[in-house]
Length: 129
Image 1 (cartoon, rainbow, N blue to C red):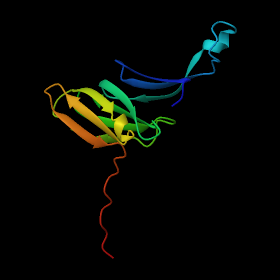
Image 2: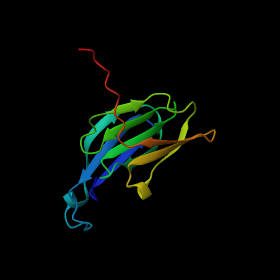
Image 3: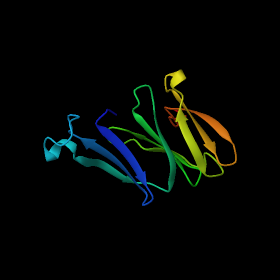
Image 4: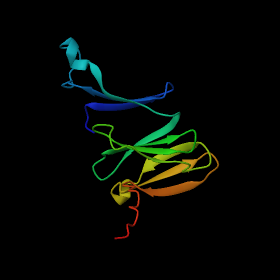
């Protein structure tokens, strides 16, 4: 992410990555302040969002269902989900900057708090040779 990007999540279950070519000036040219959608994905009903990862390269969203979704910021690719991360609506997700954003915390409406590593990688099934 950079200072010319913006991520939005809306009630229509869409997450959008917006970018601008703005130079920081206002009104010099009509195109200076135009935002354009670079990427859009369909989500489930989302209640909170944060950036995490050592380079702020991951978007983490908490959902009404209790699921957590993780995507890369630049392309919205490499999507991963933690289904049933909580039994209730996730109210808040924050990145732990004091730990170099290598972890994030989620909290649900009933007060359950969980700590997660930013880089969740599924275990590879052991193969017998």
